[in-house]
Length: 299
DNA sequence: ATCCAGGCAGTCA
DNA sequence: TGACTGCATGGA
Image (tube, rainbow, N blue to C red; front, top):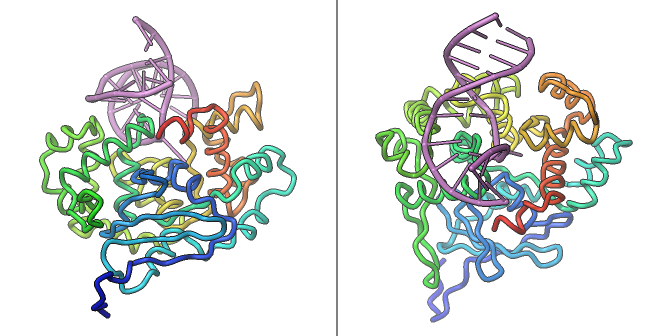
């Protein structure tokens, strides 16, 4: 429906979102393309430019072009998830996790696009979050499809499509500071573009099978596979075990001991249970903020 | 300057 | 298996 008035209806919606800390969620190291501009969070979701704000229990969203509906945004933000049900599944007598939950109240998991998530985390290995953000910005600006923005904002770019990345020579990718990760990124893009890596199907597989398929990719091991399982496929039991979490788990649960990643992995499954991925996100953000290299300093 | 970053894969014992 | 190392690049 096109309005004929001189002030077209803004493409806005307001979502009621209890137990949701938008800023914390967007800066907790699961998504890399959100930028704070004049008090609003701006990014691209799929092919859509979006601006978000939170006021109390309400998230307001604005797009540049009128969307048919807003299901894509609810899906991305996972607004239907009742956080208390997740928290109730955490181990009841864990003071460390309890402290993390208290400190990070309203921290959520997003549901991101599988290709963008896979590509982003292929690019993440031995890089700091600020650098990951920079690389993704460069790639998107140079190779992503332009998307419509409001008149007051500069043109924005979607994350580059697999077919685009697949056709680029590796030197072009390396020029975006991807470093040694360029070959793995390109190889994954080729598989997605060919159809031999049907991410949307794989996302429906049982966790173990999906993880195994992802780990067949160059440059993808347990850590990155679990990131995709958790942040894109919505598998809440997937637990990305990175250097931060290893350090945190060792310090908090096994001080002075030297556990191997495999042993830590078993402990995680036994201890944190079916919502281990959420627990991981709380612990990850908690220890990062405590070490004061969290979002306040990196943005 | 030195170490390390939301890792992974190859090598050698 | 288990420890060690190279890989790019730039922050802290």
